Image (cartoon, helix red, strand yellow):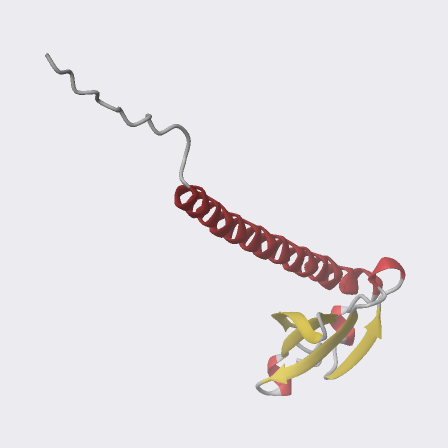
Length: 135
């Protein structure tokens, strides 16, 4: 009897080079996307903080430079803030709406700052009714 000798192939253990390279590429792409999205989220949060500061400063304008209802006149005024908000500037404009006898005024408050070399601003417009006492 003749026996044929079967040479069995050794079982493959581990991964081939192609499989490892493909896994590294997929992992790299995932990390790039994750880092890019995290960076964008940080930028959005920083911008939101700047707008929150601007809203706070809009309210501060009225506290530091109050308007008296009987002294409202058309015009504008500007200024800066002190302390940690020294990079911000403000402007307040009062315009008459309609006829003088009606007593309706448009009040525009703006806060300006520079973000990444670009000028940014936040504005609030409100209307004030202050009829003259001459009627």
